[in-house]
Length: 281
Image 1 (tube, rainbow, N blue to C red):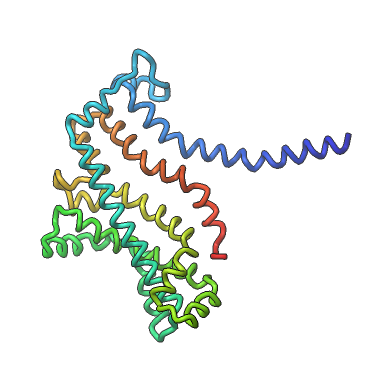
Image 2 (image 1 turned 120 degrees about the horizontal axis):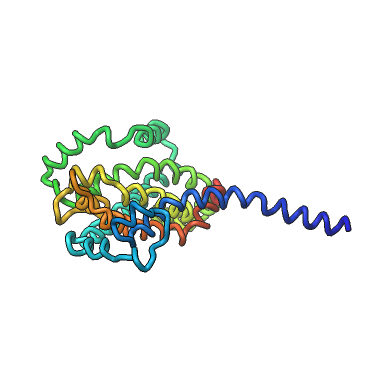
């Protein structure tokens, strides 16, 4: 009798920690679900019954049809993918090389250089918007994706270098020494160590990709031309001063969330494990 009571008590204690987690998960997903279900409704139903699922009378594809008729949304998606992909490649590649140098080589200016690179985390890049705009104009890069890519690389490098430096320091020293004894070059050792910090690279990539994909500030200032608009900026087409096409806005937001949600579903377990691990083993 006591044994069965202990088992049931143990099961109850194991399920209790999951209750707050499920509760906060539902709170976090509620705005996303609300946007998705209202994107398939008629305009009147969005305001009359915003919390109800679409019915046979209220179901409508009007928002998605308007989205592709009034705006070149395929081009907006392509621009966003190009900007995010190239930005992430250079952020991770250059950040990993800089982190390897800071972690591996002990030279007089190492702490000062590390502090200088970390300042970018503490000072928001948007404070330099006017100077960045003047620089982009002087270089003739206004209304180009190159301007966005360069700005996002500068925005993502400080945090990437700061995090990867700690992981690079945790890499096995014996492995690097053995490689040097065998005559491996420093570039070869870098590529040898890189797979060991792959979990950290994945975590940094996710945290860096989301702000770039959702950013509205720099696309609005540096690349607001019709051929260079990103998904987030393209959504603003349907937000007028006097009239707002809520069907198209909700539909565009739904499509813009898809890549981020797919990325989270694929890497969520690895992301949580890497954050809690704290070091390379």
